[in-house]
Amino acid sequence: MDLIVDLHIHSHFSRATSKSMTPENMYRWAKIKGINVLATADFTHPDWFSELREKLEPAEPGLFKLKEKYSKQQNEKLPKSVKNNVMRFILSVEISNIYSKNEKVRKLHNNIITPSFESASEINARLAEIGNLKADGRPILGMDSKELLKISLETDPDNLFIPSHIWTPWFSMFGSKSGFDSIEEAFEELASEIKVIETGLSSDPYMNWRIKEIQKRAIISSSDAHSPEKLGREANIMDCKLDYFDIINGIKSNDKRLSGTIEFYPEEGKYHYDGHRKCDICFRPSETKKHEGICPKCSKPLVKGVQYRVDELADKPEDYIHKTNKIVEYIIPLAEIIAEIEGVKSIKSKTVTRKYKEVFSSLGDEFTILREIPILEIEKQGYKELAIAIKKLRNKEIYVEPGYDGVYGTIKVFENQKEKSSELSGQSNFL
Image (cartoon, rainbow, N blue to C red; front, side, top):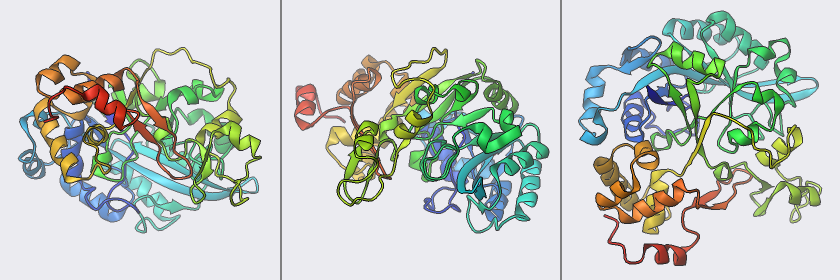
């Protein structure tokens, strides 16, 4: 069966994360989004671990569901269009590894996925000897990433270890500020145990396939969501059983069970291009090289983004297209599309919130709307403007302003107000 799987998020115990990131809200929003398997995040945090044990119960092998007394309350808030979507949890945590190696400070984020509370508990016990797990949902530990990988392997061979968002400048395996130049440099003799990497929002599989050692490994994409509304902004398409072991083994072996990924446009990621946020400078790599990596306004070093870093390490040229049988789909979140149609800047506005709810109540979950429902069917349901926008999205007729130095990029289906008015002229009101 086809499953949408999001393996990297954060709970309300992580810094800069919404207080609404609770199991109940994750459950409800996963159904709205169309996510079938969602990471729990943060199982190393003692209070979150207790909350998960209280509210979840075993379902299919290695997967968990929200207990009925909690799920019933959430289902009452959901329309029929999404209420019956299958939704399961999978135990996960992201660790922030900060340490010195080869005379350089390294800052890497790594995810561990595990099939049981018993395995999670053993990991927690071992990591508690190294650092304070209660300080943050994503704990900061002064240990080599290779040692964390060892703990994962020793605790349970069915665990999955994933270097997170591997290109972001500050906290990743290949990050320009604190990373490494190869998987082997980072993990030494255990490099072969790295079966998969995570793209992060600022890169996509095609960028990663320019790296020879990544071509040998599975590529996944996940949302790294810090609020329920952001769940599934990237995700994985799995053609497998609703079963932890089938999902994880499909990823480890990179076989047909991992059908592909659903991608945030990498230009929308906040570290895609180079630049200086304070100076309002955004450069493509060629411009950065022209300025010798120095900001022309303040004369300080520019923050080099993901595209630049990929160019530095790539074995293949920028125009290289890897031959693959993997699906690579690009989406713009539905709320962003609605906001653009309505001419509203904030996706949190009352207008967008109300219309978003009306659309999924009528048409179904967000992934189905963006990826599957025929355009004519969307029109027939009375959403002609939305049909035009989604058709443009599916045809990749989009307009891009790349992100840089912590500033998210902008992806639009209409270049400007004039084009939008022209394309939507003669259409009935959105709702």
